[in-house]
Amino acid sequence: MTAPGAKPRLAVWKFSSCDGCQLTLLDREDELLAVADAVDIGYFLEATSAQVEGPYDVSLVEGSITTPHDVERIQEVRAASKVLITIGACATAGGIQGLRNFADVDEFVSVVYASPSFIDTLATSTAIADHVPVDLELRGCPIDGRQLLEVVGALLAGRKPVVSGQSVCVECKAAGNVCVLVAHGTPCLGPVTHAGCGALCPSYHRGCYGCFGPSESSMPESLAPALAAVGMDESDQGRFLRTFNAWAEPFRSASTVRLPDPHRRQP
Ligand code: SF4
Ligand code: SF4
Image (cartoon, rainbow, N blue to C red; front, side):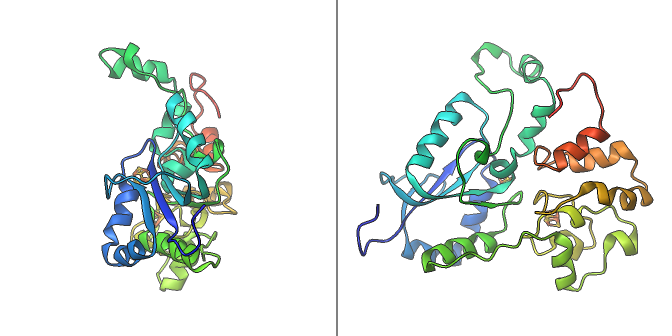
């Protein structure tokens, strides 16, 4: 691994994704300069074409596994990485592209592409942790830049990162927000969604739509009566849960029982 006195080597990898999480890292340009001083960036194609061979002390992995080639490449990334952190809804839950997991991919391919025979894809989009051991998962679509810097900073300082597993509601209370669900009747997934964004949407009087995925003790069933009280029927609730983190349990199960369709593949 790293020679004594050398800087830790960082790599940032992309699988199936829109690059939004990597851009979130680049957006923190002021802090990034300090980070760049403290690490040796070995691989980060969004930022530099320079490449340093592994092994890597820390790998950040964006994107989901959607092709046979992805399955092989993530094994190589894992083998070359001391610490592997997945970033974003794609990497931690299969992302929006995980919606295909509920349907027939061959049918999509036949409709979308002029020459389907050129397409080599898996029937599912799955999280990195479904394929290799992962040391830490950072949620969000995209991730929160401050949270990522906390994790990278903690690793450089040799301490445990402070990452909450609670719900957005806890962050809402800390921000002093009036509850949009209770006070305004706005549908909100905050009670069952992972913290990390600082309750961004409720702070602007909007409901949370769950882009950080399920919290550690998420129970969508317990939220159903409150959503029904503000006018969401069962299928509305199913679609509400089936967005960025549709394939993450328990959003996966709770949405599936609300969107029964015998022609669709069940999880
Ligand atoms: S999690 Fe969202 S922002 Fe990040 S790469 Fe996936 S789609 Fe883009
Ligand atoms: S409040 Fe919900 S939807 Fe909005 S950024 Fe946070 S987790 Fe995402």
